Image (cartoon, rainbow, N blue to C red; front, side, top):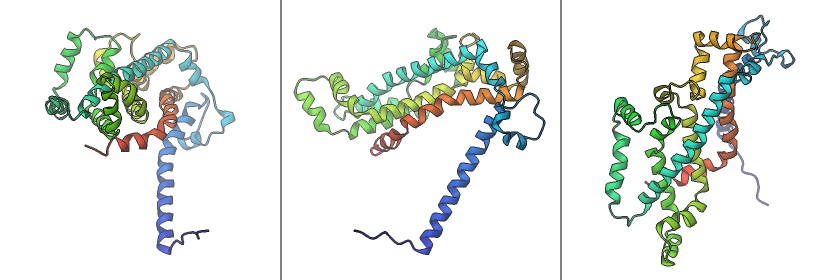
Length: 294
């Protein structure tokens, strides 16, 4: 039986420093999260400082703010729109990114270098806001949810990571399928994609988080209140003028304005908080394997 490795005094001090730093870092992250949660459950008759609110006992909490939000049609509609953008955006992004990344990974592809240059140029030089707006308008995407995710459906950074991952798959698997008469589309569908679950989930979540939090495109291209996603509604809630109108419309007037603001932020973050733990195990494998080759 092998003996345990003995740590020197310097090693123990270093480990203690690392542990203390991580605990401090977690505390810095946890305090504002807990403050938001406690504020969202604050009752209307609460009297005290912000610190008193953070230490408020759970049996004194009030769910009036959550009732105000979950019972409000605008919040439900905006949440539904955000979920549509989330899932449809991921589907569209992977639909465009996967074939492009696979084409760039084929070293014998005619015109591969030219295609690579055409992909890199938009990454280095942004055409600006006005050309993008005119393009979306001319395509007839104004006041459509697709306007939020289609302009960013292909990320060059994500494409290059996926390309490197595809290049890491043994070439013998692809060649054997081609010898058997498989087309490149068949190789991609039957060979590459079944082996690419880590990178697909990782890149898919990258796209999903971006689309879920996208405020700017929604503000530019969507004017219909029935199509506005959650970030736009959160902006209206967090602004005092929009908040006053929001509180007057709902049937739960006893909910404090500050609690409704905090509850809206917390509810908007829940889907991403739920998604990350299920896909986290694929992050290191998908990202590291996709970053080995350039």
